[in-house]
Amino acid sequence: MAILSGGPNSGFSGKAGSVVGYYRMGKWVIRGLPRLSTKNKKGSALQNVHRNRFIQVQQFLKPISGFIRIGFNLEAKQRGNTPYNSANSYHLLHAFDENGLLDYSKTKLTSGLLPGAEHASVIYRDGEFIFTWSDHSLNPPYSRAIQPRKDDQVMLLIYNIKDKQINGISSGARRSECREVLKLQVKLPEEEWHAWIAFISDDRESISNSEYLGIVQGNSEEGA
Image (cartoon, rainbow, N blue to C red):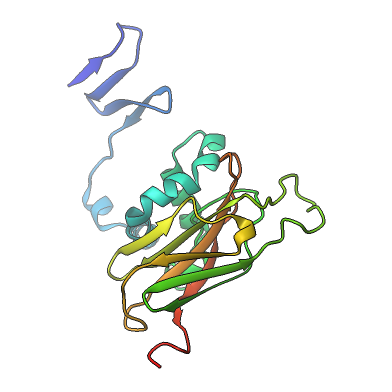
């Protein structure tokens, strides 16, 4: 049953025959219900490729939806959709290898024009993930309109994809501090933790593309 929300000339919410109405991003939207058939259930080869990619992206993004909400917020405002939908679209188009598997080196957890980290790295030691980078806010001006600033804040994420465990911060150390630590008592290298780094401006009006730092390795002193 559909419900008129503001009289006969307004939009409606709910199911009405073969269509469903709902309110999204300030607009009333009507879409047709999918037609189920044996062919649609089985799917063509191309359909199954797209379905498989969609499943992989959903499994990857769902545990980190809070981080994505911040990371793709500015892009979503420009596109007129949600941060999650913007991230979903990016990964479906750009984050797969030739075998149809999600390539973590191609993933992007934040999206923007602010310059990112330079010479970034991460190591694990004694229950801490130690991130370091170079401060290039004092370098000659970039050709980009948005310049890096010393008070930009670092955004970090570590993600045990197999076990769906995450830890991260969206308002960390300043760019000028060149170091931030995430504390998490885990064992390495038994568990694979993937790491990303990005920067967001102090006023939250600019954000960088994230950089994938790979699988975190233990420090050479670990266990000594």
